[in-house]
Length: 204
Image (cartoon, rainbow, N blue to C red; front, top):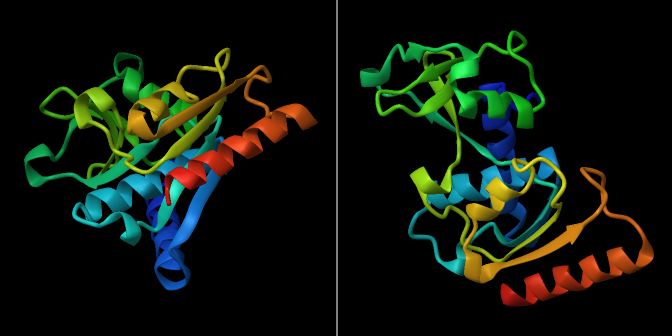
């Protein structure tokens, strides 16, 4: 799937939530890199569409994010924001970051950089917008127990932004030294496995 194709993203998020509704709820969800980003987007989407859902109604009761990039969020542009102001990509760090973390380059997607009336930078096709979730603008978005596995030497948008969107009292961290690669080695994987068990127990 193309993480900057609104149709692909919407379809993938809906399909995962549909599977969870029909066959779940599931204990947890685990994702690596863009898979972690998509997992976070699914959790955020469900929470925003079901703000009064009880803990036992959540599709996933905990999450494990490995080298997860900061998630993006789709939204329909209100009429008052159409058409959004077009702005050069270099003037909108949030839009440039979306291209970076979603591994798509400008010119290969129908989305272009724009700015909302409140100054927020987005990517848009004029009808749909994609924003980068930001704790300072949007607040905490993920309220289930989470485990974040990442390398401190990796890009800050591969873990730090996602961490900030999660409830800090329900969050655990494990830092490895493998850059953006998957952690390796028996001892390291055993430690991560134990942390996953601990995170799962927090969800009970």
